[in-house]
Structure formats: structure tokens, C-alpha cells
Length: 371
Image (tube, rainbow, N blue to C red; front, side, top):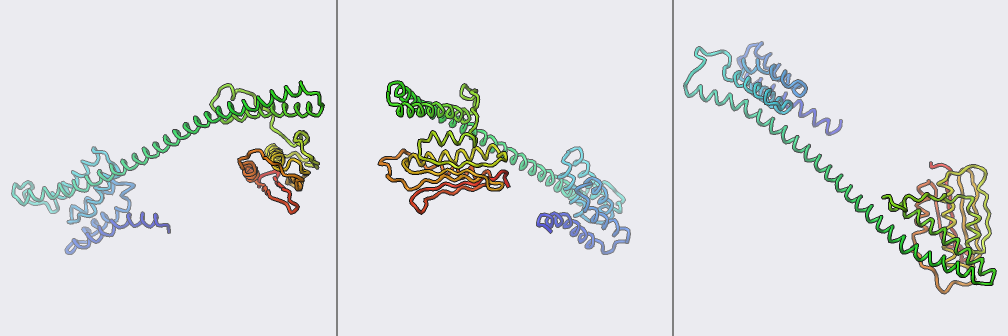
């Protein structure tokens, strides 16, 4: 039995037990019907939370014919705690006061102005007022605790909303900064490449300049889309139409424009792969080729994309470069981490590391459906 269930059962039966003990202590010379009324008053407490007023009325006969206190006191407390309406609590408390004061058997003189009668009246009032006030206080305490908990949750929600607004604002600011700085630099690259394409007489240089210009324009388009997503607050950037996302069919063009000595084996099979899987495969090849361009631009590259059952395997491996570049492009080290997280979200895996011949290999396995 759970601890909370045991505690609830104990709190329900404990007043019944001590009320039965109270009835047994005062029933020394009681008749059977007096003992029955006292027992009924104690047993009725089992239903006090569901029928508090009814239980209070059932305790009154036993309190009137016997000098029992605990059962009616518990009943008055329950009425005040479960039905905290003054129009109900005060009459119930007054009823117990009258029953306690005008005890059976009734005296010959009901209204006695003696000191003993005054003390009995004070005692009857206190016996009823004490549990009534305690029950109202307990109910008020529970209501205040619930209200405080509600206010705390409301403040937590407001804090989260404020933090989200600050995050959105900061994200928008960073997106604008990134757009202004990166787009300016890429635009300069595009302009210089265009100028070189027009001015040079070397066909190879013109072709390279044209490729650089196309890559710059495509980078600017993708940058605009990403900045629009990051901002997420409307505006011209967000209103721009989204460009088609890269798919497996775009891999030959990506490999061709990389400028690397790469051989490709692209056999994804005839099955339709989910868009997220195709996009992840494209980004894996793209990031691997970018890293090779940075660190081993003269190395021989092997790209393999093939279906293996219900999984798409992507392998990009470069052999040991004949010459390591004197200077490498800067990198943040987040590319492979992002690819690994993307693969894990799809239910796949990604491994990357050096090979025995001094090269480097990136391998990803992406499932057709998330398991």
C-alpha cells in the first residue's frame, strides 16, 4: 500500500478510534441504548468528509445522553473545514453548544443564574467555538497555500515568457549582425569574382571566378533564409520565400563545384528516402568536403552514398594529402558535432576519424524511418 494511502486511511480512522475510547471511558453506568448512541457518534466519523453536516447531527444524540466530547468536536471541526460557510458553521456550532449545555437528563430549573451554570455555559461555548475556529483557520490556510502555489506557478510562467522574449530579441539582434557582417564579406567576394571573370583572358581562371560567384550568390540566398528563421519576428527577411532544400540529386553538382579531385559512387537505390534523411546526407557530404578543402585540398577524395537495406550509408574519405597547406581556413569545430546530432535525431549514427593511411573518413548511417 502506498505511503500516501496509508496516511489517508490513518487520518480517517484515528478520530474514530479515540472517539470510541472516549465513549468507553464515559459509559461506566450507561444503558445499552446510551452506549449504542455513543458508538454511533464515533462510527459516523468515518463519513465525516463526505457528509459533514449529517455526521454532526448523528453525533448530537450521543453527546446529549452521554458526556462524550471528542466525536462532536471532530464533527464541528470537519463542518468548518469542509463547508466553510458562516451560515452553516455558526448554526452547527450553536447546536453543539445547546446540546452540551442542556444535557440529559434536564434539570428542574433550566436557566440558573449561579456561578456553576455560568461556567457550564462558558464551557459549552468554548467546546463548540474552538473546533469551529480551528476548522475555519485550517481551511483558510489550505486556500492560502493553494493561492500561493498558483501565484508561484504564474510567476514562473512569466519568468519563462520573459526569458523567451529576451532570447528572441537577442537572437534577432545576432541574426541582424550576422547578416550585415557575413553578407557584406560574401558580397565583396562575389563582386571581385565577377570582376575577375570579366577581366581575365585565362579560360580556367574565368571558370573558377564564375564558380566562386555562383557559390557566393547561393551562400547569400541560404544566409537570408537562415537569418529569417533565426529572427522569427517578421520583417523583410522572414517574408522571403524559402529556397528548395538540398536533396540527394544535388550531390553531383556539389562534388563538382568543390574543386577537389573526387570520385563519386552515388547509388541511393530506388526507394524514396525521407526529406530529412536526404538533407542530412547532403549536409554530411558538404561538411566533409568543406573540411577537406580546408586541411587537405590536394588529397584524393572518395564519396560513396549507397542504400544498405532500410538505411542510407554515406562515406566521405580522403587519402593522405601530398602536401599539407601552410595556412588553413579558420573553423569553429562545430560542423561534425552538428552532423552527429542531426544523425542521432533521425535515429542514425555518424563517426569521423583519421584512417590508417593518414587520411580522414566521415561515415554516416541514416535510417529510412526513425526506430
